[in-house]
Length: 416
Image (cartoon, rainbow, N blue to C red; front, side, top):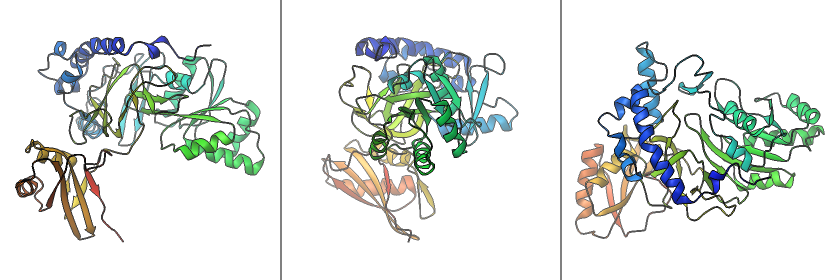
């Protein structure tokens, strides 16, 4: 039996990139024609010219907050609940729709493995004929359905356990003897600890795919000590699967049907490979054709290929949130404002705004990396005041001094 879900996972990287870039202009053109919102956002864009990552990077980023705002405005006006982003409507083409906090509504199309989760499940060891215990919520949100559709595409049978009712779930595991678990890592730990207390037989569980929250190595090892090989996936309700873990346990491999960029928070500008930034995803889904969707999650590209033989780009996994907005002396300061300051000084290569002090006694200092320090601090300080309407200190550092963690605004205030 193959170690890989399909041959796409091991193709030549240059061939993969050529295929993605050939598909990109078609997807942009489709989004302009079939999605009212993207037709507006991409007005004037020549889709045929969007055939490279450099061209893609010139398009606007749509963040979750933008998606929510457009949906809310559209609903308030009695129009489309999806804010004009969906390319399909109610009926046979949309068998289900979901609600995420906000609420943000997401459509589901009819394509087999619509969310593309099968690839992640297969890498985690799920195989045809397995019984999968699905403990993601089946209430309103798409998480459970994302994973169920992938498991069924592989040929698994799925038990829709959902969340809660721990004792009933333990009884079902003992009697049905599933080999695989799907859900959050924290709930799997709860199930195993309750099984230890009650003596419930959960020995059939051997494989797991988790998501929805952080999965530290210590918890992974805790599961392994109990005979479970548990892997993590990274997916969102908007775009489906983005990346997945393999047996190598070295980062997450990107899905074959997404184009991922890592950009500096508050901007749409891609960072160098290895630098931490916000993940921006373009998904090749005709039903919900999101172009440059800002996930709000931070990650970084890992160098080299996966030791399992999969050749797609790897990322480090979830490294925090990109929304680093801080309220300072009654004023909100956004990462985009820091980016605006930096744009005015080409000699600055990197910057970080540090907010310190105590409640009602805020202090802010902009740390900037630059090889040209003469007179720079004073000029930047004036721009800080112009852009943020707040006074702050500026300190010039040597290039390479700031840590590579993606932080643009660091809030170290004490709230004691």
